[in-house]
Image 1: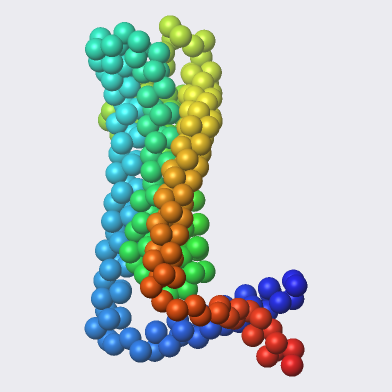
Image 2 (image 1 turned 45 degrees about the vertical axis):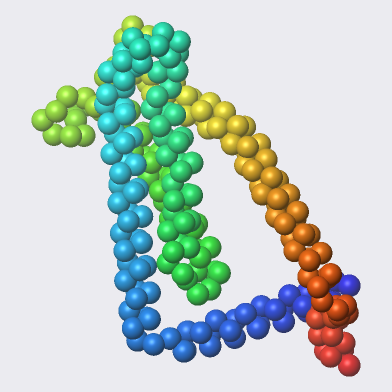
Length: 236
C-alpha cells in the first residue's frame, strides 16, 4: 500500500512539473516582462512594509512614556498594559508580517512550489530577526557610551525609579516580549483553529448540497481510481 501511495505521488509530481515546464515555455515575452515587473513591485512593497515596521518599533520605544501617560490619563486600568506597549507592538508586527509577506509572495506567482517555500522562509525569517535586532539596539543604546543617532539624546532612557540598573531594565523588556509572545500564541491558535474549522464545516455543507444536486440531475457514473490504474500499469 505504501509503494502504491508513493508511486501515485511521484507520478502526480512528475505531471505537475511537466505542466509547469510547458507553461513556462509557452509564455510570451510580454507575459515574462509582466511577471518580472509584478515581482519587482511586490518585493519593493515588501521591503517598504518591513522598513515601516522598523520605524513603528523605533517610535513606539522613543515615545513610550508619552503613550503610557496618555493611556493612563484616558483609562486608569490601561496603566498596567501601557508598560507592555513596546513588546505588544513588536509581537503584533511579527504576527502580521508573515501574513502580508505570504500574500505578496502569492501575488508574485512563482512557478515552482519550492520557490514559494524558499521565499516564505528567508523573507519571514529575516523580517522577524531584524525586528528583534532593532528592538535590542534601541534598548541597549542606554548602556552604550555613544549615541546610535548622532547629536541626539538616548533613544530609551534609564528608569532609575523602577530598576536598579540599565541591564535589568533591558532584561525585563525582553522578558516582556517572551510573555507577550506566549499570550498571543495561546490566544491566536485556538481562534485560528476555530476559524478554519468553521470554514471547512461550511465548505463541506455547501459541497454536499452541490453533490446531491449533481447526483439527482445526472445519471450514475462509476468512479475510477486513478491511483489503481497507474499502479496496475506500472506493475504489469
